[in-house]
Length: 323
Image (tube, rainbow, N blue to C red; front, side, top):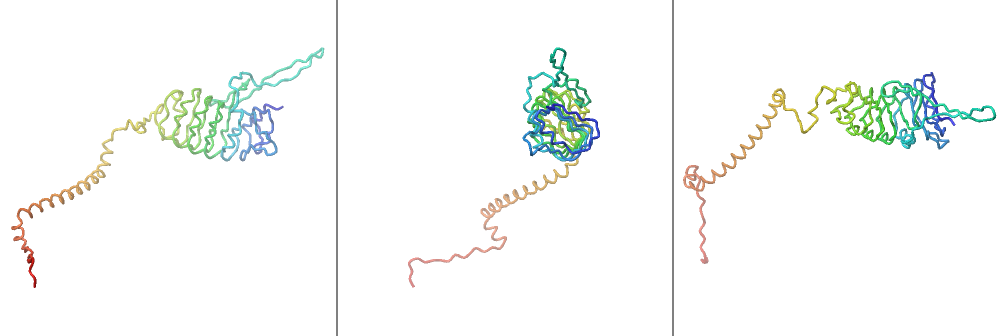
């Protein structure tokens, strides 16, 4: 049964070979550096096999397009269920017949070359527990779905050089075995999730040349990353960049500069003025009412004479008199 398929660095021009999902033992699929195009569909209607054991996928440097759907990431069950304690290598067995009809098994390991941690690396042997997904240098667009956090055994994830947008999903913080994460050269926005500081094995992290903003998380592996990991994001601040970002910490706000005070002065003065005027009107009205009442009560005769107000005539009423 086919376990290993490497067609990298050829000139194959075709759509994604979804029919390979019918191979129940396929573990490694390398199609990088070809001319594949179109969207990726991994559904194979005529079979129940959907890459059930595939845990190394390299589709980089092709012309694939479309969004990376939830269904796409939900199919890689082998990356979820890999046995982390398995330290054996992927290898092929070949029977070798010798004299006296003795059958001696001959074993040779699979080897491959993929991009890992920012550089091309040759693997003369491949651990069965190793898992990687490289979709870089294509034309994938849309957002990265949160379901990617289910691929808990994933060690390498490269989505660089695409047209991906939206925010970095916080669910990436669940990939506890991740050693390399490359999201550079996309159109990602928002902040870098603080959940990524939980990735204790993360050696390489690259989000350069996106549209990210806010403070860079601190602690754990993030204290080891260099400036180049965050280049090309004018809205990022904090270590290791030279741009400070106390502004993003509500507990440590920067003192207002003299320039900002001058700019805010007219607005604050206008707001203070109308409040002061309103307070004056209210106080004046109350004082006027009190003083008027005092004058009218104590100087009633003078008030009536001065303003020529006549006393109203009272009508006499005689009780008990009949006509």
